[in-house]
Image (cartoon, rainbow, N blue to C red; front, side):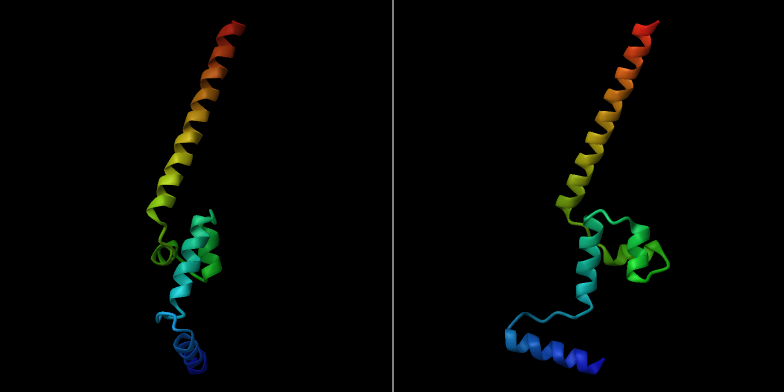
Length: 95
């Protein structure tokens, strides 16, 4: 593992990119995977975790992503309510 870490440290110094740990990329990947709608069970398997709680330590959805998720839920619920209303209206008109 030292060779990878040494190569990483050298590359950061040469590129003048601010220091970060290679392990940090795992958090970035997990967050982006969760935000792209990969379900937590699949994400846990991809990360090699046996428990969903471990996934939650890696995936950090942004506030914007959470807001968009709530908007999708509201839209889903509205469409479902409209469908239920139309079904009831149809049943009443058939009586």
